[in-house]
Length: 169
Image (cartoon, rainbow, N blue to C red):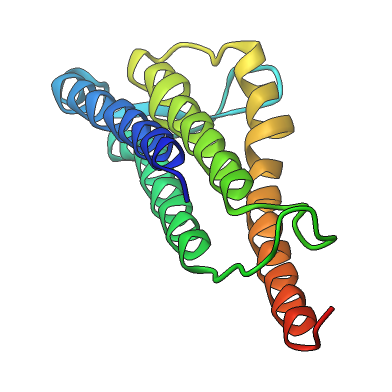
């Protein structure tokens, strides 16, 4: 894997974690001033549809943290997949770089949505920006499935390529 790919991967991961950590600082600063009952979840219109105790202010951060951990684990797995394909073979369609790029993009989207927009709205007790819900439903959640599917396809293609090479194809 190229040095440029590694740099981009680590920069994207660093930005995603920085968003999470900066947002967590805001959480700890704002937490004491939150009312005992807060809105924590948003309906399709962006307005709160679930109210809970103020401890639920940690909810978007927990989701962001779990997302970053899952994407980190998938990135680690993508880096460990052994690929032995020659350029231009029929199994060289999906590359490790493409999988890492997808994972990096979704790391940033999840971090921006959960530790950014959602957390900000909960801490300020304001409605979620209407376009933020579209990003979550139409991009972020399907992205997790897409990234995992790309990793699985990469592993399958890698296995087929090794089998083809061992058969002399």
